[in-house]
Length: 288
Ligand SMILES: NC(=O)c1ccc[n+]([C@@H]2O[C@H](COP(=O)([O-])OP(=O)(O)OC[C@H]3O[C@@H](n4cnc5c(N)ncnc54)[C@H](OP(=O)(O)O)[C@@H]3O)[C@@H](O)[C@H]2O)c1
Image (cartoon, rainbow, N blue to C red; front, side, top):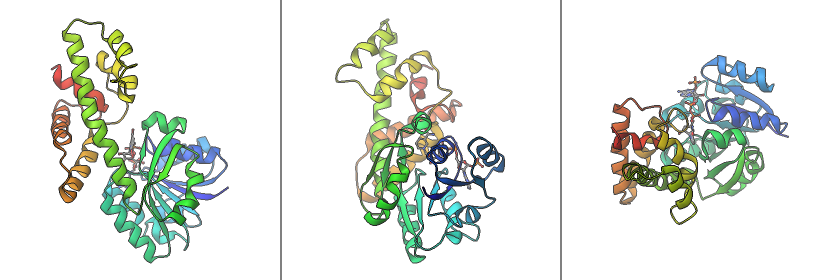
């Protein structure tokens, strides 16, 4: 069993750290809002630290799952950051969905300090984190990855090294590109079925077994039909992810016309008050 630290006990991080504790790893947690860390220790045991640096001090692996690039730099770097507390040879595993650029920067900084770094964004949402069945897309050196793969298995159904630092984030960008257009298509399908006077649930039930079937259809079709969005993966987070991948596309020359359009649709959902709604709320702007 490993001695590990977990930084960021949000919707995703809290259950992920819980799975590590359940597997028998010695977990020290840090959360910016200390009350959440206290509640986590009361539920799972382990220890709590006041700074990322203190949490990371004796850890073989330091996990992080915070919001964006700036948050990640905040917990990793600086006087109280994790890197300042980590022992040579320890590995920092970042589960935040962030840019490939910040992953490459932190990997280089870690290397200069004798530390390992793996960018490891996840897919599977809150339910995936709670049930320990996330998909994890990793970037880093093979030898470093080999040291963390089994520990990540505490909350993953699939975990794969995709290439050097940044490759995990680039793979997550592909994931989000594939989701963006699909959710718009599903929104239009459900919207059309309603206007056509069809039994929407029956429609989804039958077409989900054919070529139109998808995770989004299985898991979001019914709630879209009911107009329920107060759960799941927030529109604000999706806009962050679309911003990251559209920036990357400007650099690598990829053409992403549908992703760019869907980003604007999500901006409309935000203006409708849907910043924290699930991403399936794209249908709401069709039904205003
Ligand atoms: N939710 C999902 O379905 C989902 C799915 C896949 C990927 N993700 C990605 O996973 C990451 C976390 O998502 P989440 O849903 O767990 O978010 P969340 O519930 O908002 O949690 C964010 C966590 O980061 C911490 N944090 C934010 N800014 C910080 C800073 N500057 N310094 C230190 N800590 C900071 C927060 O601390 P406080 O408690 O103090 O606010 C909290 O612990 C995001 O990158 C998201 O895109 C989310």
